[in-house]
Image 1 (cartoon, rainbow, N blue to C red):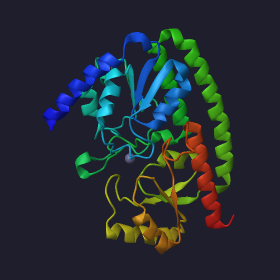
Image 2 (tube, protein in one colour):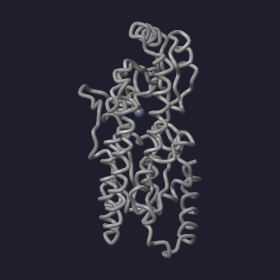
Image 3 (tube, rainbow, N blue to C red):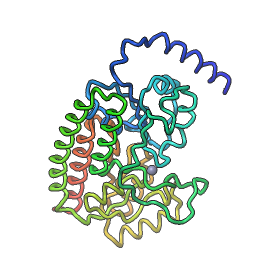
Image 4 (cartoon, rainbow, N blue to C red):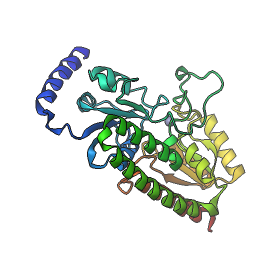
Length: 311
Ligand SMILES: [Zn+2]
């Protein structure tokens, strides 16, 4: 299998070299691991960049099946933007190594870890290892779900694109300013929509939403997964259901890539509403860019809270 893959890579890279002459060199070729990073890169990069995301927005970003086409994309990239905090550790490192692209190796100029200048929550203090099953050993990697972190990611992308393509510095700066203004306006809209529902208690499937909850004043009282990446045991579910009844929790937020069976059974026991909330751009057709992702999620959540509370 290894040999077949190696042969495939060699052939594929030879074809890639033929198919992509230097004529398209004017655009920076950016590959991002997720659709959210791709959306932010498009906001800042405009038509001076060509952006491809590896994971689809409806996939679990911890567990992405690496397709052969990913190798070609990474091989040709001028810049690779990653979520970091070990989000992609299960699937990205072999791609980067096999890409034979020195520009985008960790530490090189064409490698951007988007987590370096953002607010990271849930940084573990005790000894937690991946061997114990926890897929968040370096703090919570779902940090893009706070729009203030989106703002910081966009800044980091602007700076990196300007470094790689200095002639376009003013263009990137202008696009970034415009995005920042639209994001600020949108944040006022989201804050106003959620302000009446501050303190709403929710349960989420995975720990995807701490930044979102913190930003909008929601209280996460429990998780369907006892630990990130670990399936629920019966005893965990019994405790969770009891706690939800005690605290009168009415919302269970579930990422689109998880099975609804367990959340649905919790909902039957508690009367809570199961809400399929996309955490990424492209998770639903409506979430076509970073701002529209929050528009969708905020509207969905507000409608569900109103329905659950009758207010
Ligand atoms: Zn996670």
